[in-house]
Image (cartoon, rainbow, N blue to C red; front, side, top):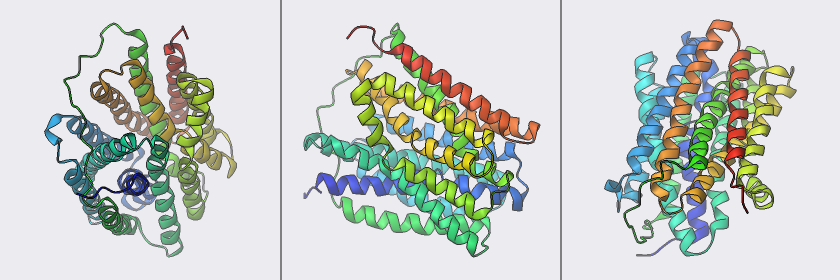
Length: 385
């Protein structure tokens, strides 16, 4: 069986994450304002739909961490990409709240399968080839997908297309992405390693508990702006083209973010880099509502895109550093904490926005939670060299 080169696999991983995460999960953000206007959805409705997707992602990630999928990673990853395209099309063919909740839950499940199984394929071969430097290319796919979805929305806006067109064209792009990923991956499957039984996680490890809490708070804090940023621009009267521009800036900033923050971590340490990235994101979240004109949303897009992908990776790296003997168990635990934060965040923010009439209180809440995440992570750093 012929195995694809590490670079080819990293590019395949980038495209798979662009489809499943950048488009499959986050295209909801630039399409959301149109759905709210044309369907009469409230901010609370929008929060529930977003949380259904994050709940699906949590369920999918936890299920994927089990041993039942061993040997089926490639098939499940391709199936997740196909489901992602189909579910995006279904979003554009319905207009009921119940259908939105079910479809977005299933889309979250599909995107989790792609993230976990594609990453397992790519990383296993990168480790074997000693090319861990290509991990940043793989994760850059999230930013690429966000940028692609914003370009799509800019085109649709100039054509005065409705919200449903955004979902249908996203489905078409996702289907094309599936074809390219299948071609790049070919018959390559996960490089098998020795799979021993992992020990249970330590119960009284305070640094580990702090990182789990910090990661959950990060999931809560980042997702508020990641869900409502374009809606904030719409409420401020920025214009449809500017909405697409803000989301494109977010995606473009995400492309090199992991590479950049890995450099920072190499200089100041993982925990300090995590805390610093949280602080930078706090500035972006606050700017989305505190800085007027075009500057606030653009700054928010740059700082959000430039941190949230990297923070996701840095948090997992700190956990693996604390519990190197149980990587799958700690991945599942961190994913659970992060997922719970993601589920609660949009609901709380949507309810606050609906009650107050704007997104100021919701964004302040998110900024405070992100600041707490960074401070807790900073305090979790080992005190001895």
